[in-house]
Every structure is written in C-alpha cells, then in structure tokens.
Amino acid sequence: MPHIQFLPPEPVVLVSRVADDPDPAGPGLHVAKVAVGDCTIVDARTPCAPLQGRFAVWTVALQLHSPDTPRSLTLRKRYSDFVRFRERLLLCLPPPLRRAVPPLPPPVPWYDAWRYSDVNLDRAWLAARRAGLERFLQQVLLNRALVAAAPVVVRGFLEPPAAHRWVPVRA
Image 1 (cartoon, one colour):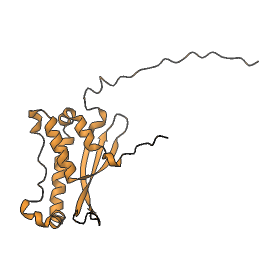
Image 2 (cartoon, rainbow, N blue to C red):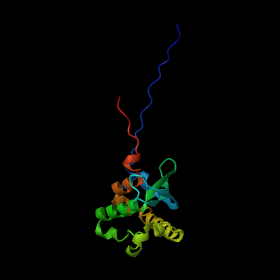
Image 3 (cartoon, rainbow, N blue to C red):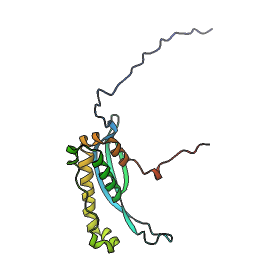
Image 4 (cartoon, one colour):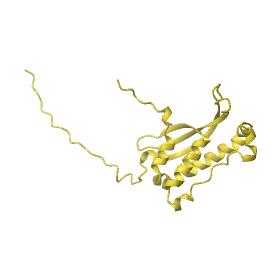
C-alpha cells in the first residue's frame, strides 16, 4: 500500500483594500485619460417617422486606472447624453463642487432650428462641439473630487444604455 503523506493546510491571507483606497468612488473610477473622437452620423428617418432626421454619435475613449492592469473603455454617446449627465451631476453635487463642472458646447441656436440638420452636421460645427465635449469630460472625469462626490452618476454615464445591456433569459 502506498504511503500517504499528510500535508497541513496553508493559511488563508485576507487582504483589505480599504486602507489602500479610501476614495469612495472606488478603484474602477480613476480615469487616467479621456478623449472624444470622431462622430458617426446616424440616419434615424424611417417610413414610420420620416421627420426624425439625422444625429451625431460621439466616440469617447477612456483609460482607467485599475489596481491590477490598466483598462480602456470605449463609449458611444449622443449630445443629449452629455446634457443629461451634466444635469444629473449638478443635481447631486454640493454647491462648492458645482463650480468645477464646465458648461457644454452650446446647442444649435434657436434661429437656426429650421435648418437643424444642416447646422448640426456641419464639419466646423462638429469639430467645435467635439473639442467642447472633450474639454467637459476631461474637467469632470479627471477631477477625483467630482467623481468621488457623484460616483453613481458617473458610473451611470459610463455604462451602456439599458437597451444595449445583455439580460440573460431564464429557462
């Protein structure tokens, strides 16, 4: 009969990251770099909704600090997503931090609303809007105090819309 050797169990080591990461936003929300790239023009006109029109969807590239490895994240956002993000951010931030939230680039002026698609899809207009959106995101997402004060709002902006989330089907 073979000889059985007794191996004592190895001790379990518990690691707490609380002392290492006192930031309430958590380690996943430390943005190292953010850039707004080119936009994609989406044609939303359908036979059922011929007046919908076209709009721009912006590509946002983020480099996140992570305790283990750096992660990158690519998002697709409309201008209205940025507007909602800014509004929610201002609602949940304390007054002193609200001043750190920059304005967004302006929407199409009211006097150009009758030719909205032409103005909103003009190359110069889109270039100025891209620069303004990038400046906005850099000043918000690279500011750890803002991110720590509104982690739920920031995470909500960084997550894909509910319509794009995968939901498992129960059998």
